[in-house]
Amino acid sequence: EDKVVQSPLSLVVHEGDTVTLNCSYEVTNFRSLLWYKQEKKAPTFLFMLTSSGIEKKSGRLSSILDKKELFSILNITATQTGDSAVYLCAVYHGSGNTGKLIFGQGTTLQVKP
Amino acid sequence: KAGVTQTPRYLIKTRGQQVTLSCSPISGHRSVSWYQQTPGQGLQFLFEYFSETQRNKGNFPGRFSGRQFSNSRSEMNVSTLELGDSALYLCASSLVASSLTDTQYFGPGTRLTVL
Image (cartoon, rainbow over all chains, first blue to last red):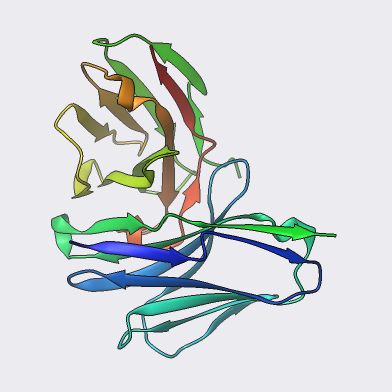
């Protein structure tokens, strides 16, 4: 069965800490992996990863994909209270009209002042 | 540039009824995807439309259907509503052919409650 598993499910840190969120997957015909941030509204796209070993960065956020070990990590450095959110990982697999997007359960991050 | 808009924002229906939700993508975007989000199941992909054609489909029963118009606006229909259909329905648009491999911009969602 195709699945995406995120860990931890929740995390509490203090401002300035660095956090690493994990996403592992088991799917057929992997195409890409996506990270989203969801606060009390719709998800916001963060990264899309298709190639193994290439890091994507945006400010304090970065992500990398390991297609051999079937996982991705999302790093947030120097966390701020505004980083508090649910972080969702999703994997697009398949091809053409059989392509599907599977989401993980999400990691709830709380950053305390 | 206006973002993705969804109407209505909130909706209350009873079991057995049917409902139609609307999504207007960002101007110039041609791909629209629909998602269902519930506390128990999380975020689940429903389907994706591009140029009025369904390109990808998730694992939902046939009661869930959609369509896209020539102006890229999309509608999602759920027939014979069940209590379990209560959820936040999100749509996302993107510029290129397959929104599942490109930056997607989400709308605010429609909160559907089935009584």
